[in-house]
Image (cartoon, rainbow, N blue to C red; front, top):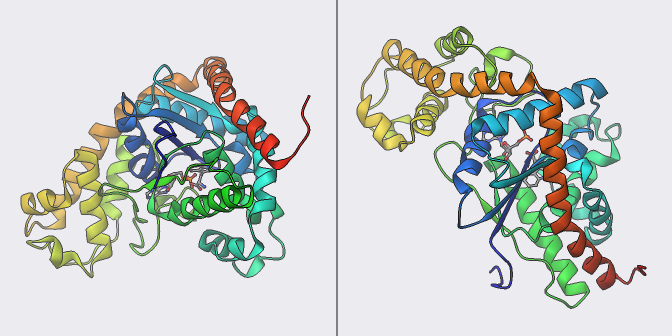
Length: 339
Ligand code: AMP
Ligand code: TRP
């Protein structure tokens, strides 16, 4: 249970390690927009320090950071309602991250499935940062005493680890200092799948561009990608149950549901028994109508990088104002001398 002494506060982040995908939008950003308002303080971060756990060309990293920030703003993250910044401007992330490297156990890191997937057979050659990544992610969250973390399904294990780190810190130092943060994983699109293989997640870095929708894709590209999306030859079923063993079909129904703010049940009842020749163009039209205004606005924002940088700098000032006192208390608790 989250102790009531913690103000309801949301933290979440996206890595600038490539362009934004429809998975990022439906699984994360669209839901973050909905959490802005009176119930929570909302803090959203472009996690550039996480991006460099794998090689990033410096110029691409700078541009990618601005692109993610532009995508968030264009999607409705309002820098006057939320704190929006890039991680490396707030040094306290790295500082608390170090303390958490000393709280976390190697065995905990060894259980992280994302690390195992990314490192694969190459575990000896990947960066030490990639291995310690979940401990920095815990620092991102706990530096703000965040109570809620909206993420896609793939991040669930990392948020659970964050709770383990908070518990161990609180236990070791005998003080209920960090909250036990709740992951918030809800809606029809917590795991948007690859358009060419319904058993794999849609990701920024998959090998073929046809397997994902990028937020900057134009209308023709979006239509083409949905038209070529892999499906089975059967028409849509009458009920959701009928899609149980049809991951590609289920994925397209879930995407339709998330884009149109409906449940997958409502979508399948509207399109019960429909052929792909009817459903795919309807999905493409829906996607274009929702995404085109966002990508137009993203392009407009990206034409003025100085303005994006200035928004990120203002956000970083606000983030520091929350983070620094919490880091200072953590230093006192650990026994570090401060002036
Ligand atoms: P990343 O691009 O890995 O930094 O992910 C940023 C956020 O987007 C995280 O909350 C992820 O869980 C979410 N996300 C990324 N890909 C997907 C996907 N295919 N489906 C749902 N959520 C996703
Ligand atoms: N690890 C997350 C991802 O790969 C990104 C991330 C970093 C994050 N720090 C975070 C998400 C803190 C939520 C909260 O998608």
